[in-house]
Image 1 (spheres, rainbow, N blue to C red):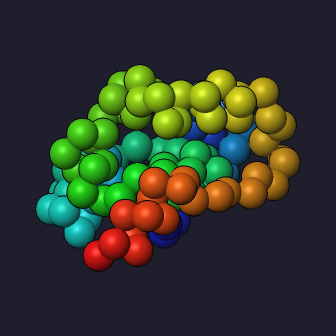
Image 2 (image 1 turned 135 degrees about the horizontal axis):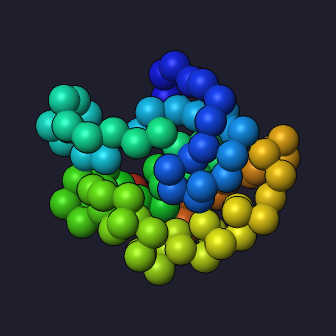
Length: 103
């Protein structure tokens, strides 16, 4: 996840959180020099727990697409209510576990 700073998460919009750089198209899928977003660590981890890089590259490569997706929209509503100091535990989705195991 690389370097971090303190600011506002571009996905959940919580303030005063530690931020990381999220490649909207994963680097492994050709996104090294494409758009990035500053996300809080819990949002960044949750995205990668829910989605494979292929899906992020093709279907969820903008913040708007991520916010509209049913799998993460509920999480965003929930995380907005959490204090920035709270440690959030991230769990992989059942679908993500199944996809990874079927390779």
